[in-house]
Length: 288
Image (cartoon, rainbow, N blue to C red; front, side, top):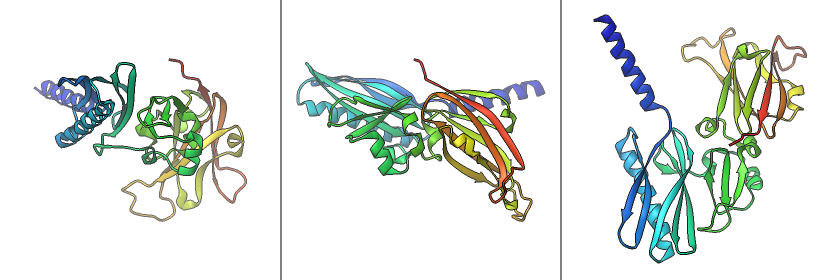
């Protein structure tokens, strides 16, 4: 009996895990009302039914708006560009003879609304300079697609590796691949693709003045320190000296290559670290 109960519990946990994680389910809905034929995207398996309906209303509205802009009988369709658990991007298109119109729709599954680049990146001026002038954007698996004309094709591609420095670290994991490391990675090599990030989590005690920081030698190699954060466990009621927390350092690289990583645990006014963690980051060009 106990074995049966355990088996049921494990199956329940597994089912919940599978249901809660993974990518957004996108279905294809056929349409044929005479003037407009083809397929429009729909989402399913969203836990909030009102959220699911809201997202599908947005996708349907944008599809029909695109079709109506042609002012003639047309065929509509779509292509999936980015598919994550909390964000996905769809490229809609409407064709009539030799003419094709395009519209990218980027959906935040946590809100049910269309999202914009400012939701995931900071330093707007620097980001806009890197992207150049554009009408709107589409999130892709390895970068951002932009265009200069309304209804035109998204011909300009900017890889994420070129704009990593502007990523909001609080949102990065929603659309970028983030590799997680601890101090156990010392002495090893990590192979990643361009445009991916590394989050190094190390025990720390900032109440004593110590913190983990990237050594100057690593910074000079071209490595990008995207951001840092400090986490104090919720059960740490005593904030006096001796309370332990966790330092998280987010790293990336703008180009392929070998990057020696050295992290120092020290007080900022001291010359020599109390401890160090070193490993190598091998950034490679992603091949399709």
